[in-house]
Image (cartoon, rainbow, N blue to C red; front, side, top):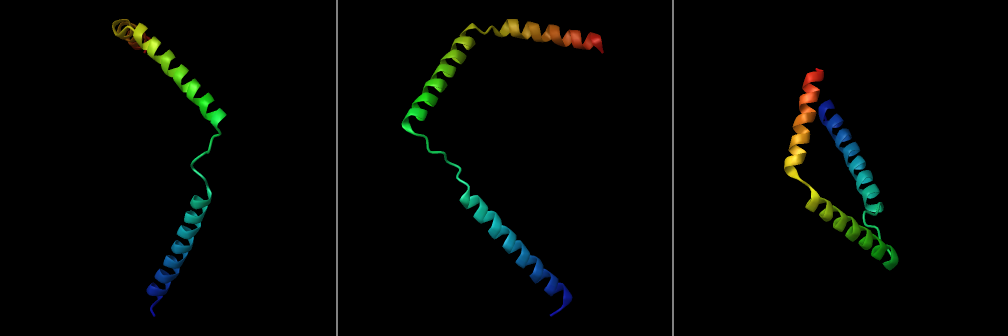
Amino acid sequence: MSLFTTILVIFLLFMNIFLIILYLSEKRSSRYVAYDEESRSTLKRRVTHLKEELESELVDFDIEEWEKALEESLEEEIKNL
């Protein structure tokens, strides 16, 4: 066996060990959190409340006023340069 093939085999062996360790650590970590019913309903209420709040803010949002304020802000920044 040549030196190159020996080094290649050792490298591949270490890579396999490294990948196995990564796989096992990922398998042990749980990605999904199980919520009890009370926590789930609390989260649902919070999300619903935030959604309603956002929708009410979007109704009041004036795009033309926002664009005007943005242009003024940009003009001020340019003047300060």
